Length: 410
Image (cartoon, rainbow, N blue to C red):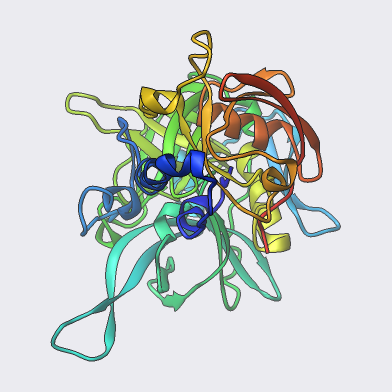
């Protein structure tokens, strides 16, 4: 399955099926372009023009008690380490004043062509927040959400003193909704350290700093508590469905806060604000990506410019999305799984002999009820080069097919 860029890639792959499969061609083509290319509706709405653009063209993402410290390893990676359990004597105002210097505004500019002009112009399509976390001789690094910068032709960063500079994207990962930017120059001591999110407990006090509704309300501070830890929220991304592990907080998070800092009473970043539930009548349900989860992603992006994940090389659909007449021959006992709708001809799936129409039910003995189960197992438990055993049904025949995981990163 293509879990990084499969939606775009698989729609451009065509196959010559044998005659007995020709009647299914139209279905698989439509299924890939429709179901696989769609973004499912869900109640958790990220603060982003990307997700809102799925329903409208003009979106606005305008919008613990342990002391920890950020250290650089020999490789330059950022980590969070516990140093003491002493309480800070700084007031909330002092913490906010120091932390706010590392909070930036990010404006997503996209090219727009007018029928009255032969040249394209850059138009603001949304804005969000970012956090300065590292400065080197090479420049200043900022972490934010992927959905804040996705689709941008230019990115403009607004600094604490009002200066506006252009930013380049070092790398981004749609699945975990993280991105790292770099701007030229250095900006004093305006960086924030990462705390250890594993020490958080419900009831711990936290502060959210960001730019709700745009830069006019830049560095707005809201206060709350950790409502829960290790929440799992299902989100739709441009890389597919994913269950995101998050910190739940009642600190007010609004459109434009995306990519901003959730900090503890030490002034350390323990999360990057990303989501909220915005149903009518619902209040105080915001979510942040924990620092311990984002650090490995951020470090890999800095080191390589991308996140490498294992790749099977198939397009797929959950069985409940497939009309029954395409499941003829499948045993009645098989009610869950994923149907292969297309295959990357250069992938491990193609080399292993997996075919369009196969129904995958497990990998290495772990049941695969749907696409999210497959992704979770693939990305959380496996790595590039691993050999796995895929259990599938081809018509009414159950088969075990060995497969070596590759990567589609170039």
